[in-house]
Image (cartoon, rainbow, N blue to C red; front, side, top):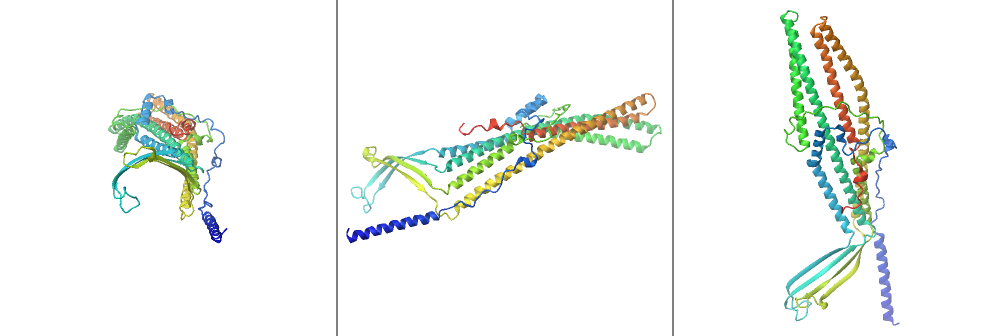
Length: 489
């Protein structure tokens, strides 16, 4: 080998060594995701006193739980609310948006093909690259090509992004069910609040009648010189107060009807004549503890869990951005100057080749992005923990109140029985001439007070039962609602 060849060979070897060294330096400086890890941990329900077995004795509400009250009017109002309320339309729109994002993420997994057709009228410079006869002429250039690209997703970035969007779809679907449960229970609670007010209005009418009789009796005694004007004024004040209470109840009943009309998307006066009655008894609850199945039957807990899954997959996608990205690209078509030879074999163009992208120096952009996704995951876990704690406390509070209320109703029943017995005895003594009618009216006041207490306790027990329906998921069945793994259904 001649000395010149030796020198050239040495230079090529030196260049190869420099290139290898530069590659090693570049790889040594590649972005790293080390040290960025989530810190939040999902809560263990057992730490909140949740039983590991299913809750016994509670009787999970069915999907149409409101029908157990056996009132067609209530059924109709709940159905109207679930099919025409704007609040549900908002949740449905959010679900549709989440599905659109998932469909877009799903499309990235498949190869993409795009076509283009361009025609350009152009004068070519006489002093440029093109020789005569093109130089200095005006010609029409036309090109038609199809471009195909396929991201191989070697490290699963696109799959992780799809899983993240699917998690958001499932969370949005659970949010919609949570909104349905909230709306249906709100309709039922407003319905029975109106029932309570209607019952109190009837009681207020009896109370007003009793005060009117007492006022007339005292007026007779004043005329007979047996009482003074002081007693008369006291009875008149009590009568006026009873009139005011009845008017206040009428106002509250009107507002409750307006609330029902708004919940069911009707004019304010559409339910002006609605006067439902209270059920005789609320459902008896035997369960003492919340079971672990509560965590799978509340839509808000399910939604929070799916958001953890979505945040986890989103973080996985952020991790894959630190790795190489391999794409395949290809194109084919026709290109020529002028239309004459445009679609001939000589005008064919094509190309194919891979493309590799490797992050080396990005000034911390990838680490910052991963840090943000990790923080999103921590926030999702914290939200889930807060939701679980709130759900367990809510259901436990309602159970405790229902058990206490059952004991209160027993005592109130005894008190009402005693008041009715005292009223019956006073009436017998009055008929026998042994007592005045004032004693009868006084005993009747005790009966009216106990009637009011019974109405309030019954209404509260029904309201707590409805609150427990909401706390227990309102008939939500995640196994049936969340089966679909794909979003193109």
